Amino acid sequence: MPVPSLSTTSFLKEAATQYRTDLLSESGSSALDWLAERMIDPEGTARRFVLGYVDNPLPGHEQYRGCIAIPYINAAGTVVKMRFRTLSVSASCKYLDMAGGKPLPYNLSAVTAYSPYMCISEGEFDAQSAEIAGMPCVGLPGAEAWRPEWRRFFMQYRTVYMLQDGDEAGERLAHTIAKDVPQLRAIPMGATKQDDVNKYLVDNGPEALREKVGV
Image (cartoon, rainbow, N blue to C red; front, side, top):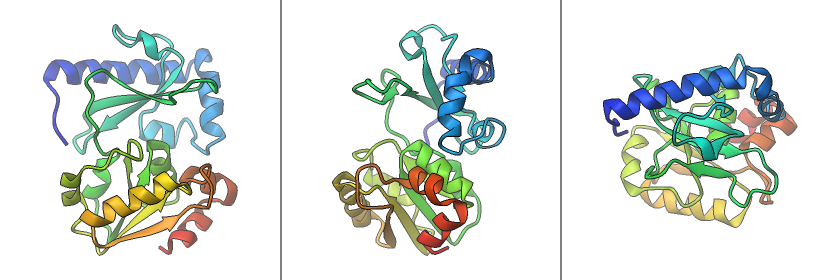
């Protein structure tokens, strides 16, 4: 994962700290409720992944006010990127990137811990959901985000499980990754567009998710 400039790193660190504070303030109640509905608790998963809420945006982040902030953190604990998830049900685009941001794998630090297998999900919250179930998981920021050069992160694993969304885009993504990661094993989360890792976790619980994947 590339390392941004010191000024960018400092800015992102400050932003992550501010938005974490905003999340735990009275203004963050709607975001906390949204996360709770997805089994993401404020002092557990949300703290681990430094999730935040933009109520007091730093300069340049005004357009993300009211969004959940999702920092991308490398193995050294440095925030190298940030994405935002709108809470508006009428928004045409649910996820927003900072200007000039390049696609990066999410939770890439998962590959630094020993495991005979690794999971890949489509989306940051799905990666967090797999981790809640005790499965190491790297998230991709969208169904079209895969880059062939990312194969190097997964070649060490005997099996790589693609926790596949239930729609056609999820199936296409699994086929695309399999061209670069031959040990990939696709595990569809259901048969509809709404079926993803987080929904399966919420509907069935962590142990059931592990059983579905077979680990």
